[in-house]
Every structure is written in structure tokens, then in C-alpha cells.
Length: 464
Ligand code: SF4
Image (cartoon, rainbow, N blue to C red; front, side, top):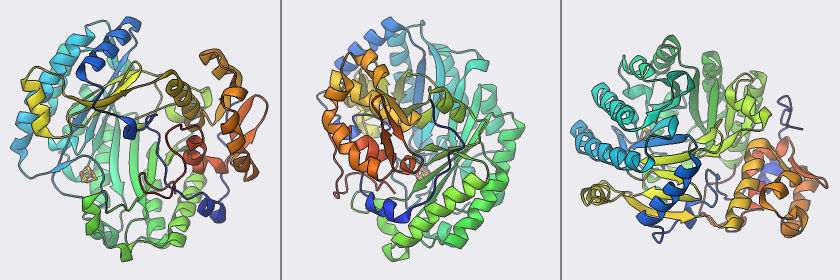
């Protein structure tokens, strides 16, 4: 039995406070903290060769690190510059990496998914975007247009009139628009001034060009946000009715994210207001008919994410949630992370080192991680919790040849208090996440994480 999409979440502020700790978002398991430089280019090549034997479809990720201005809240890997020429050498190297990676893959594996992330992918000119797509087509076996799931992150402040339509011709069918908040005072405080009109114009262009799914990103917990001001932003967004919404909690970690020092802590909403912002968001979105997917993501009931959740085929990857079965992902460009066969690998984080590796004829692998049998098992359980909200013991036992109750006896014990608080329900065959528990998926998943335990130490963002 799958979770019903009609299960609505009843808000309980005291319970949220009780479980408010720091925890990973589990876009990978183990998390990037376990990655190590002991994982080398050679390991990556071995993993890719093994996965080629299975011949599964591929997903590609391109990281375009440049942005024209700094949003003070941003913890992404980005380079702030007004020098557009800076992208020229970067693209030459990215093209080199494409040639090298594609040569390792051969022409037997079809690329079904492609994602441009950043930074700001539209920092590139239309001509540069076109050349990058042509280079991709030249070297990889792209799926027929109707089977493609190609997406790009768009900053509505930095996109040209024809870009959206031009990308559609290459088979792009999903866009994700950064919005965060429409309130002017909030926008000034985070140095991201973006009008409703700019956002609406991109949305209209995407709809006119026939994009299948539009996502918008919002953030709650930003400076000067109030329940009233955020309610206005949500009302505007509901009027735009994107198919998907990602509404993140702002994690103020100025010790780890330098740019956040530009946000004055005294302007941040207090803990009570922040919880009220979350409550408001959940209520408004549920009233508007959105389904809560989990981990800050909402979608309209007929969106593929909701359908995949119901079918039990939803996946979690570095971009959040995905409808594609466990495809291998090749990440290209600085800092990008890929997942191939039984390993994660991350590219060099700085342009200079990235260029140097490619100049020497090497793949720019900086670090990575090869999963053990225990990692794979725990990853599957965490994936089931995050995506389906159900862990079925028999199916895990069949897949991994273990006895669930004895293998996870300690974890099942540790779930008992969560069951008392109605976050999960346990039976002899299943762990089922309860509606309120969907707000605390990280806490539930952490029970199965062999590396992290709930902590007050700030290595990850807060779960709320
Ligand atoms: S939020 Fe986006 S546009 Fe702003 S600095 Fe970060 S990556 Fe760049």
C-alpha cells in the first residue's frame, strides 16, 4: 500500500521543536562528508566500465558556476563575476571533459536525463548554450526528443527573451525558476531584487514554448520575512500555479558560508515566526491542491513526481527528487558530483585545478566514495523512507539477502520513540512514515545512517 496523496499534514509546533536538530538532506547516502581523495580517477574509470556492462540509460549534469551577483543566502558552488569572457575557457575545458567521458561510455548508453545547474546556467550566451548542446549531441547518444527529461535552472533576472524557446528545440522540457520571495524588503536584505513581472515573463515563455513542468524555488526564514509578507508571496505564486514547488528552510551558517555574514542575524525571523512560516506554507499549498512529496518539495496531483510517488518509482538524487529509476549520473564541470555504478565521484572544485587535470589528459576527479554492501543496503532503506514513505521488510530482504529484523534490530529499537510521537508506524512487515513524519524525514532517515547521529553540532542544515 502506498501513501495516499490526500493525507494532509496537521501542524504541531511543539513536536517540530522537539525534533529540530541538524541533519543531512540525503541527496546521496553516504553524504559527501564521507567522500575521500583516496577515490581516484582510476576508481572512477573502473566503476564506469562496470556500469557500461549493464548498459542502463544515463543522466548528465553540467555545472555552470558563474553568477552576475551574489545572493547573500546562497551556499551553492558559484563564482561571482561580471566578466562574461570568463565562461569561454571554462567551456573549452567542459567540452574536453565531454569528449573524454563520452569516449568511456561508448555509444551503447542512451542519455535520458540532462540537467544544467549552477551558479547560473544562463550566464552563458545563447550561442554558448547551443554549442554545448551540439557538443553533447555529437558525443553522447541522446534519447529521442519525446523520451527526454532535460531541465535547466533559470534565474529570471538573467535570461534572454529567446533562450527558453531555443532550449525547447533541444528537447528541454523542464525549467526551475529561482524566486525565493517577492517582498522588496526581503529581496534587498538578501541582495536579490527580482520583480513579479520578470518571473511571470519567464513563466509565460516556458508555457508558450510547451515546457511540461515548471518548478519554482522559495525560501522561508529569510531576513524581514513575516507571516503576512510571505503569505503575499505565496498568494502570487499560487496564482502562477507552477507544477512543482521547492520551499526550503533558510539555514543561517555564516561560519561555513561566508556570504551569509552579509545577512544581519537580528533581521532573521525568530524561531516561533519561522515555524509559523512553515505552517503557513503547508496550509496554503495544501489548500491550493498541492501534494507534499517530502523534503520541501510539493507538486500538483497530476505531476509526474506525484504519480511516481504513488507508483513507488520516485528516486532521490543530487537535484532533489526524480522520476527516473536508478540511472547512473555523470557530473561534468567544476565541483559536480556524479553517481556511477557503486560509487560517487566529485570533480575538482576550483577552475585552476579542473583545467590542470584536463590539460594533463586526466578526468578531473577530486574525490569520491565507493559504497560497501552495508552502504548500499542502508541507501536503499533511506531512499524508501524519503521517496515512498514505506520500507517493506520482505522486499529489502529479497534484494539484499538479509533478515531485516535482526540486521536492523538496533535501528528498530531507536524508531520506537518516533512511533510514540506518531512520526512512523511499525508493523511486523513495514515501517510506514506517518503524515506528520513527512516533515521530519531527515530525523527518521538518520536512524539508518551508519555515519551520522542526531547532533547539535552544525555540520548540516537544520531539519526545520
Ligand atoms: S542563488 Fe543562484 S543566482 Fe544567487 S548566487 Fe546562488 S547560484 Fe548565484
